[in-house]
Amino acid sequence: MPVSSDAASRRRQTRLRREYIYRKTLEGREKVAYEQKRIIREALAEGKPLPTEVRATYDALRGEVDAEDITTEKPKSHVDNEYGDAGLLEPRVCVTTSRDPSSRLKQFVKEVKLLVPNSVRINRGNNRVDELMESCRQSEFTDVIIVQETRGEPDGLVVCHLPMGPTAFFSLSNSVLRHDLDPPAAPMSEAVPHIILHNFNTELGKRVGNILKCLFPVPRHDTKRVITFANNNDFISFRHHMYSKPAHDSVTLHEVGPRFEMRLYQIRLGTLEQKEADNEYVLRPYQNTAAKRQLL
Image (cartoon, rainbow, N blue to C red; front, top):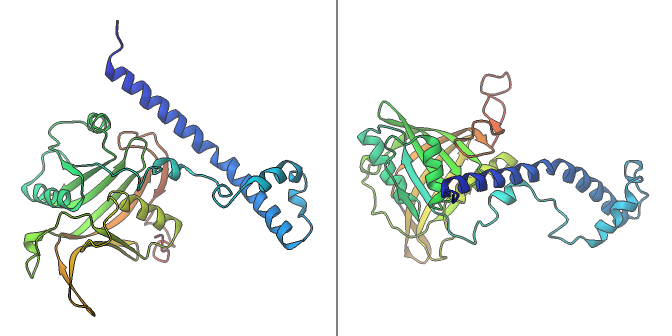
């Protein structure tokens, strides 16, 4: 009997996931070797004697140090595998909601769909999460955005990168739709926007910024549409503007909307339906030092 396409697709996803996990397990060994080679490289450059902790491995590592260049001396990570084609292929994003959405959530999702170029809005219906993810993989989407609500107010945003993850979970607050803006919103352009990532300085901040910016294709240099993700005390303010230059020395901003605040509370190293995947980050607000830490 011929093998069904669904079974073949599941086997392929299982194989790719196994390869991804295997590459990720090698990162620890590569980091140790990278640190030893860095010490050897610095000692040779400064003409100093080798530290005792690398003398035993010097003979094995010296050949690798001599063969490396500026692009190969730094170890690759699972982030390079996840977003290896970023900037080369345009992302295709699926935008949907939780089940049984309210009219306000439907309107909010329409505006999110207009925000992201090359995105498609679909009705969730009664599809389970695993069915939704499998359908998006077969349709060759690169990312899935799911907007959630409580009593008609958008309060959650999930960004899942396909096919292997990661999945970022954000809480939403202070959502203002386009028709609620005062003064009224400017017309929304469909041009690819410039992305501004402000104050994402830590490793976790750079990771979150990478997840967000990879939802958007590379813009043209003359695009007058700007999307801003501004981090302030681990709360990410989202703003959407068009700008014009009435004179050579002045710029006028026109808010397009919507606007909202986001806060990251989890990053999972897998797709949304993989409950067994490892957590890269989990927000823990009930700790003595939580008020003092700046994570992004």
